[in-house]
Image (tube, rainbow, N blue to C red; front, side):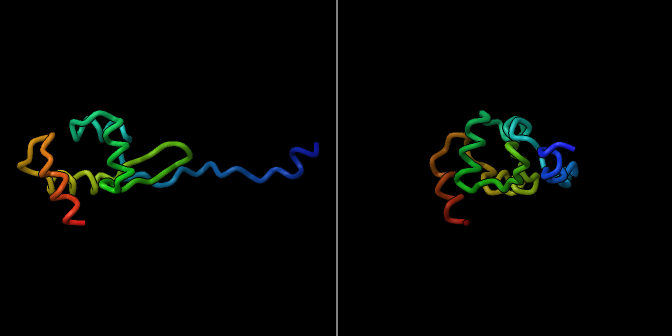
Length: 88
């Protein structure tokens, strides 16, 4: 046994349960936005995420909530942004 293996912590190979989550790419396709816009939405707090290492997984419930809040608005409507911030 070398010094490196003697002090190495055991690795966790268990992936967290990602049921009800999707990737940023899948979310961008669902919402009809560019993937960079989805990342901005995450930073603003519009979408809930679970981080696994460097990967982001977006809650399907938060995508559905966002779609319900913005239903009836044009994709680029500035009024949509105002409605979302009022409901927070």
